[in-house]
Length: 115
Image (tube, rainbow, N blue to C red; front, side, top):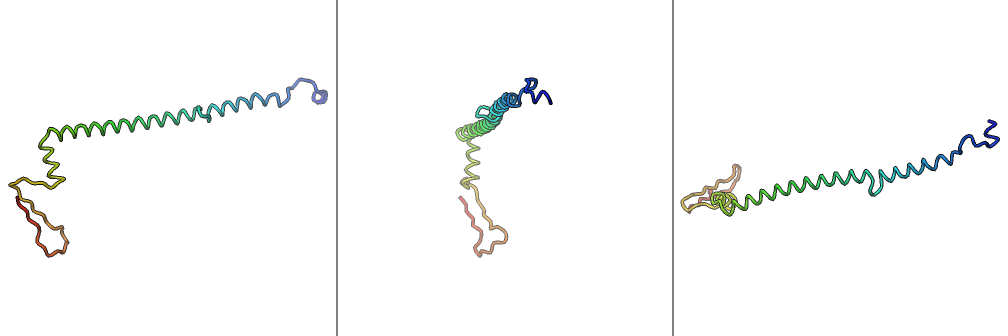
């Protein structure tokens, strides 16, 4: 207690020690949370990986579309199957029978077409 009363320089004041600690804490906070901090870098890396995955998926979809375009240009059977499925087209020597769904109560007979 005699040292504290006499003002001897045996222990540095608390203010002198707190400035370097405060400076280190501020630099650490900037390194973690700043615009170019570690957390932003991790977030940017995750975003980059997400975009790369989207690019891979789009490239695969583009490749599928290129293959379908090539089949439409060169494969007559594929073209015919699409015309039959999506447009309901038939050949001249075929008959198409259309039936009412079960439970429908219309008095009209089923439509029969022939070509």
